Image 1 (cartoon, one colour):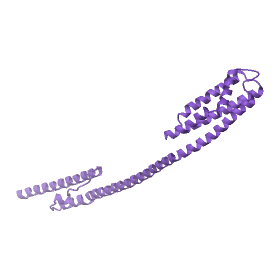
Image 2 (tube, rainbow, N blue to C red; image 1 turned 180 degrees about the vertical axis):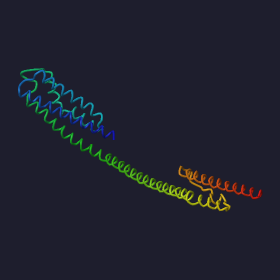
Image 3 (cartoon, rainbow, N blue to C red; image 1 turned 90 degrees about the horizontal axis):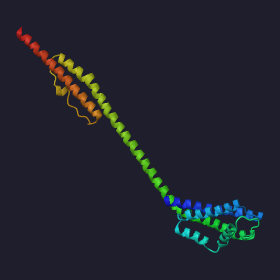
Length: 253
C-alpha cells in the first residue's frame, strides 16, 4: 500500500526530528554549563535547527490532514514559543565566552516540555497509524491467501491435466505398438503363407483402413496402416502375376 508506506516514512521523519531536537538540547545544555559557545558549536546548533525544520517540512505532507494539523498547531502554539525564541537568541548572539542571551534554567524550562510532548505525540501517532494499517494489512494478507489458493488450485489442475494427457499418450502408444506387432508378426506372415498356398486374399479384410487421432502419434499409426496395406497389395499382385504366368505355361503345354 503506497499511502501507508508514505505515512510510515513520515512518522519515521517526525521521530528523527525529535531526535535532532534532543541532540540540540544536549549541545546547548553543555555550552551553557561550560559558559561559552564557539563558532563551531553555534554552527552545529544552527544546522540541527535547519535539519529539524526540513524534516518536518518533508514528512508532514505525507501524513493524514488531521495528524499534520496537530503537529503544525503545536509548533505554532505558545507551548513551543520559548524554545524557538531561545534558539533564535543563542544563534543571534554569536560565539561568546559569557552567554547571556539564555541561561541553563530558561533553556531547560523551554526544551524539556517540548521534548516530552513530542515523545507522547509520536507514541499516539504510531498507535493511530497501526489502527489504520491493520485493515490494509488484513486486505494484503487476504489477497495473498486468495492468490495462494488459486495458485494451489492451478497446480492441482495442471497435475491432473498432465496425468490425463500422459495416460492418453500411454494408451495411444500401446495401441500403436499393438498394431505394429500385429502387422509384422501376425497379418503379413499369415498373408504370405496363404498366398504361397494359392489361396485368394482380400486386401480390405487383411489390411482394413484404420482411423487414428489427428495428432503426431495418430499420424504414425496412419503411416503404419498405409504401409501394411501397400505390403499386402504388393504381395497379392505378385501372387496373381505368378498364377497368370503358370496358367500361360499350362495352356502352352
